[in-house]
Length: 308
Image 1 (cartoon, one colour):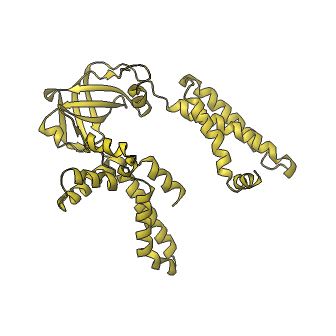
Image 2 (tube, rainbow, N blue to C red):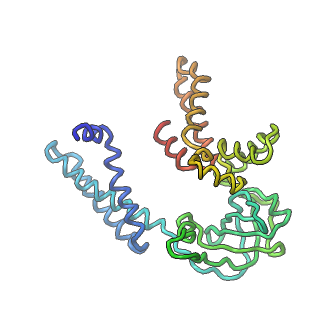
Image 3 (spheres, one colour):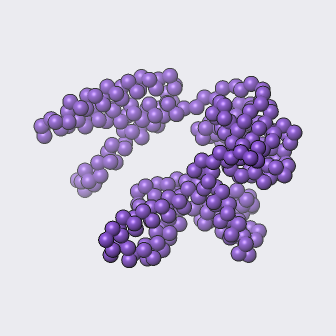
């Protein structure tokens, strides 16, 4: 037990993280109207902390006593502030930005779009046409219709897609026929993630041009760049049944390979004046660039923070 206690003392960040995470978890069951109460409590405890910064050693425990509720209420405020409750939208004309490459389904294309007003995400299904088939992230879209609220469907205790989508900031959906939408080809509004998706698409085309075709190409794309959209359901199920589904996901191993290769290539920089800074910048740029291209999966995101 003393060994575990020594470990905690050597990593104070973990002790601070516990009440913060607890606040986030508890905030999921609190109404969003409570966020101002939580913000006020956070500010009050933060002000109290300023009075205990210069205390003597024997009174240092008071600082920790007030720090824990300050972090707890901060987590509660952040969670309730980010809560999204979708509201009904009127029928009319909208402008939006396509947030990802449209995914081809049996009878339609699917993509998440960002409305310019109000600033919300909508899950859109498009009737098949050449203009949507060739659309890229960042393309500006005009459409006419009424986005409807996502509804909870299925039997009790089944996967709750409505809750899952809302937690990811998507509360509406719409099906658009070809004559009800138009892509403004002269306009593009790209954010960082959309840029990374376009770069990933270019890299996937390079891999395909190397001679890989069919399901082999989709497997390599999934393992190397996290592009699992085109994998056949049978392939995914076969990996799941054998217990190796994790192979299809990009993970810390990918980051480790990138780090080891770059470390071997750039090790000479450490021996030069100012070389360590350049070495660190190149390594961090490569790791975070790869994380962006693969869509910032949790496995890579956490490793990039904790290891690099």
